[in-house]
Image 1 (spheres, helix red, strand yellow):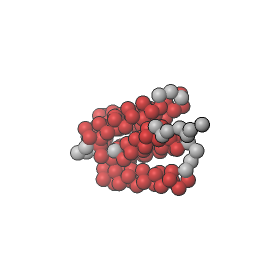
Image 2 (cartoon, rainbow, N blue to C red):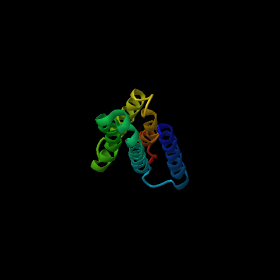
Image 3 (tube, rainbow, N blue to C red):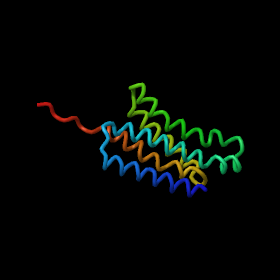
Length: 131
């Protein structure tokens, strides 16, 4: 079940990357943040039965921490503040959580990190010269 979720997440990330490269949306960072959140939520939803059977009540935080971490950049973007910091913090939390739970469900959350890092990297592109 975990392998299926991880492969599905990776395919989702590749599809989002392809869409961003082909379509070139006006607000690429927003697309990347929302996609990372959607992929994380879908992975958590797929893993709910497996995690509840394996961990019982602990499934709430095992699956909740990555979802809340992926939600932070979206909320920061809506607030218009510190979105790049939220991208990096979310990527760090998802990576840490994925590695902490790496032998179990954690691997499935790692592909969304690629989108968050891409969103943060897109923020640092140089502005065109006005002179």
